[in-house]
Length: 163
Length: 177
Image 1 (cartoon, rainbow over the protein chains, first blue to last red):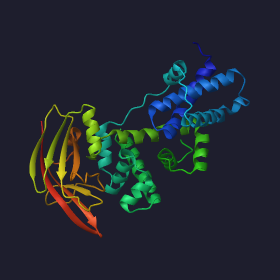
Image 2: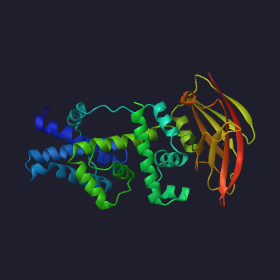
Image 3: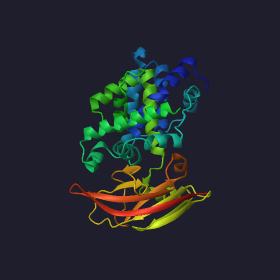
């Protein structure tokens, strides 16, 4: 299947954004990828059929479609679409992401204060909410969020410095 | 340069934004390439952290690692014990299972130190298996190059009414092969 250049460009532009939406609302990479396929097919079909009333506001249409699809999935309405061409097109121009090497990341984690490290471990390893962490550490949830921000910013800066 | 603050992106992926703020953020993400990149970086950072094996793991995590085929040697360590552990080339991970009496304990902290010195590292509220009386310390190969001494003491403690109570101390001597 050959896609017009505009549709390829649309896929490249919006695939990362749909993926992020999927990661936030669906929680895993596989489902986020499925969402990318589903949404791109729906939107491109709608564009071809002239059903997008304001093509200049395509970003809002994309987001609205994401919301509708995820809502539908939660209600049990799920159709598996095959849109490998679209997803492949979107991925060809994506920058491959370099994971932080383990020793460098662990070095940065070790440099944190015990409290900062605890909040990160509980947030990202144990996937606890701010409320759960607050109860365990006798803090307020707001305090936990501030600690989480600070700790993650320190990790980010440390990784950057060690690059 | 992102228009959305780093802190907001962290809160977004943690699900901590209220509905209105989340909606606004998403609307902006869908219209802004720079913020999309920034959001990807924040999400990726969280993933990188989550991908590591934490220094203390739950029994369930240990079980998953075994099921995934990791080569693991587990060494049970009683309070007061002085043990030698050998990280041989065939191993992916060593688990030091520190045993203690956790009856009535709601939170366990762990200190790692060289005897006679201040703790090198302190870990607050570590996962512990109260029924089995165990804390699973995940000793990973890359720790060897991080400057930790080979001979270390681990201390498990709890806080009761603001007072520290030591649950156990354990000497572990690491041999990296």
